[in-house]
Image (cartoon, rainbow, N blue to C red; front, top):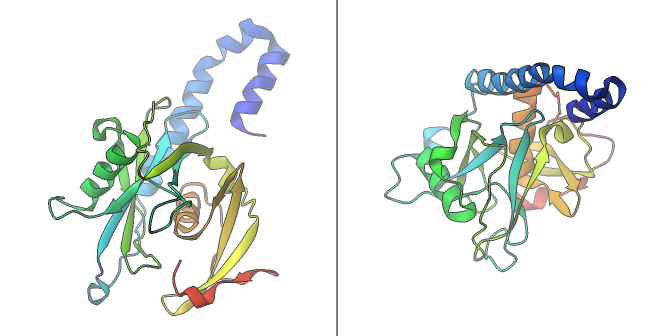
Length: 237
């Protein structure tokens, strides 16, 4: 039972007066969950690529809402884009020469793509860098954002903006597993279906690392499951 559902149940059982008397408990629950995200991501040692593996760079922002049941904010890329068109991704893109660092890249791209002002983001820290199918080194940055933000999708790049409870991924409700060869080893990456959206590939790897770090979800990507779809010919996620 999710945190949100538990509170609805308590409201019905205890009545409005008793339930509202418990609201400080709700606030403490939210604070504990956000503190856990801050502490664990900042204490995490992400994997860095070796200097000789340096490639063209990009960065994405992984926005997490400051809510009692934190949610990840994701985008559906416009279908007409030349790369990853019609796919789910975090807001982000290639590093510009003017960008001070990759964090600035992630924040700049988030503002350009979904209208999220950098000042609204509390940066938590980076996760492991990955290499895309196009040979781009992508570094994700986790950030906390207000619970209610009016996102403005850049129609040229983004078809829609949506959010998914982190709790959803902790349960690992994968629709299918994709096998790929990545950095000389086989990886078994979950593909999730959330409503009309399919969440897979590089984005799914980032999410799995996040929930494993924050919630000890224990989602395995290095051991073969009983059934999987072999995408190893693609070389990279």
